[in-house]
Amino acid sequence: IDQETSSALRKTKSQIFTNSAACKLKFGDANGALQDTKSVMSYEHYNVQALLLQGQAYMALHNVEAADECLEKALNIEPNDDCHKRQ
Image 1 (cartoon, rainbow, N blue to C red):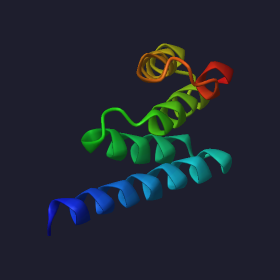
Image 2: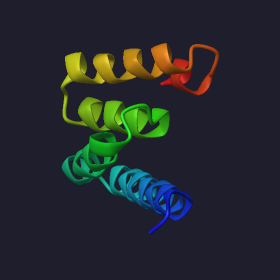
Image 3: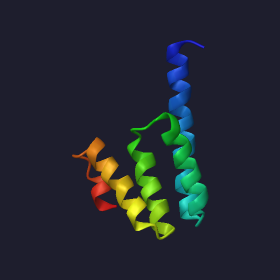
C-alpha cells in the first residue's frame, strides 16, 4: 500500500472508532467508548475528537482526574476550538 492509501485508511479507521465511541457513550457504554478512543490514540496521538470523547467516557466512569487530563490535552492541541471548552 502506498503512503497516500495508508493515510486514507488510517483516517477512515479513526472516524469509525470515534463514531463508535460516540454511539457507545450515547447508549451508556462508557467502557466500550474508552476502549475505542484508546484504539484511536494508539496511532493518532493528537486526535482532538478522540480526546474529547475519552474525557466524556472518563466522566461517565466518575474518573474526573483522567477526564480533566484528556480535556487539557485537547485544549493544548487546539486552544481556539470552542467545542472542548463546552465539555
